Amino acid sequence: MKKHIVLLPGDGIGPEVTKAAKRVLETTAEQFGHTFTFETQDIGGAAIDHQGTPLPEDTLAACRKADGIVLGAVGGPKWEHLPGHLRPEKGLLGIRKQLGLFANLRPIKGFPSLLHASPLKREVVEGSDLLIVRELTGGLYFGEPRERRNQNTEVVDTLTYTRAEIERIVDQAFQSAQLRRRHLTSVDKANVLESSRMWREIVEEKKHDYPDVEVEHMLVDAAAMKLITNPTYFDVLVTENMFGDILSDEASVLTGSLGMLPSASIREDGLGLYEPVHGSAPDIAGQDKANPLAAILSAAMMLRYSFQMSEEADEVEAAVHAVLQDKYHTADLKVAGGIQVSGSVLANKVSEQMSSHDTTENIMRCYV
Ligand SMILES: NC(=O)C1=CN([C@@H]2O[C@H](COP(=O)(O)OP(=O)(O)OC[C@H]3O[C@@H](n4cnc5c(N)ncnc54)[C@H](O)[C@@H]3O)[C@@H](O)[C@H]2O)C=CC1
Ligand SMILES: CC(C)CC(=O)C(=O)O
Image (cartoon, rainbow, N blue to C red):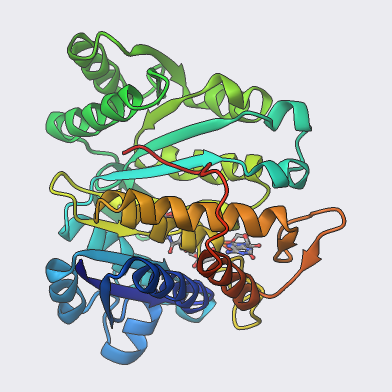
């Protein structure tokens, strides 16, 4: 099969982890007889530096024509002084919005060899396997007005959702739950926010279309607590944009590192932007320390969802599993008796593992 992939490396560790994902995709193509072509485009701070805008028209045009998109990360101290509309983060928010990528799927499932890498007790973490379905193109990150008022003595951000925006993400979450353990937790702040009350009403309406899914509502503060005290309680969580952003970074603790969490930002027709959950990590950028596995696992999600290549995705995930079993890891993961390597060496290990055809069980599959 022929597939054209746009790479958006972005800033900080973004280029390092995107290179790792590309390497693994090249190995996949070789191994399975596919032709993957790659095109690199600017986004974020790199795009500001090169083209004066965080989201150039050429980048958008290339993404619209692509079969799949892999993004690294955006942002960093170099651009922090810029006004909000010119920040690198606007590039990522803009591409999600412009491409209509309303559903961000964030699977959180620890690899068995990393059970001790979490600061949480093994008996708490063991068996956790959840999927956060985060609404991605509405809510506080996009609402208008957003401004300083009255001589800088007042500030406003706006949380807006349309009924249709809530309905489509709730449908996505019910459908994801149907493919998993059929338990859906809708997370909101309905004791305070009007938007959450509408969210709850819509979940209540929609549940009649999915009678096989058990659904409940949970306030976000309680969900934050339960995620680290009883994570195995959860199957699928659905929530609005900012709550999902925060809860998923918290949930990364279950896997041992933020550098382990992949994600897919998708829309109905199958186009997807595949992005690690982490940011540009300026504290370790340029040192070859970044854990590339979140980006590699995001590429595996692209194979599975956008390209319908589940065997290929299984192969990548199994190779990651095998490399971790062999105790290779980057510095972010605390593995007793482990072999600490650089990010590029870890990516090479995954690639070599795939080429060796010595695959083990697939344990990271995310049903979308
Ligand atoms: N999707 C994106 O592009 C995102 C971008 N950002 C941006 O990233 C910049 C830095 O934000 P932070 O709050 O520091 O969040 P961050 O996610 O970049 O880093 C948080 C911590 O996790 C570590 N970390 C992250 N990814 C890692 C990896 N792959 N391997 C090893 N360690 C890793 C970092 O070293 C840091 O200590 C900001 O400009 C922020 O706006 C933040 C989150 C998401
Ligand atoms: C625009 C991004 C930096 C927001 C974010 O943190 C994320 O979506 O992961």
